[in-house]
Image (tube, rainbow, N blue to C red; front, side, top):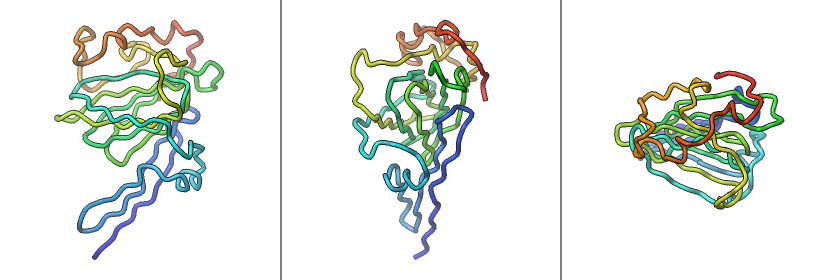
Length: 194
């Protein structure tokens, strides 16, 4: 039996604390096992995350659908369980040196992002059959939870969503997300898309 092992890797992005992670993968003739999360692996890579995540959500989003941009007051680990997406992040933290920066990343199985509290997280499903997107939260989500939301269609962010979005179509963007404020209305918006 032939076994191929791809180690976990962690890369910084243009937003402080937002990390791109390639999962450890072990492949043989039967297929592939990926380590979505292992405390010691993250510790060894210097990524400070909860030893136990408080909540995990798996969403299905149809092709073209956008979820976010949401910056709750909790760290998140996100990844794709099936399909593909374009992920987008905006640093909305008031005291951050990278406040206002935007990062986009193609997401597929095996690519994760560690999203620090206060960085807005969003995505658009791009695969033909939609995508399954996994969120791990450091604390349980609660209605009215502290944080910020930014309109994912804010033209000042410069996000090029690969599939055109009609902001009045609730199958593509929720009314709540479409009504979220533009980033500039939150205050000092330094930086640009990376």
